[in-house]
Image 1 (tube, rainbow, N blue to C red):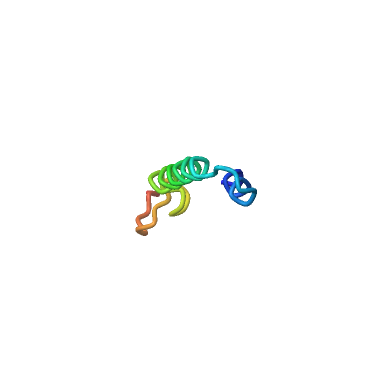
Image 2: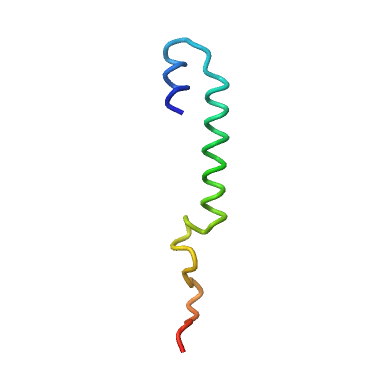
Length: 53
């Protein structure tokens, strides 16, 4: 992302750098959301159910 910003400021071609960086960032966020990392520690019981006997 930083590379595309630098290229844009310098007047160099930046479109493909920006497009690729957005795709990578979105893929990373999607994987984090799918794994439950953003919602808390994966495997955390957020419904209040106890797993202890």
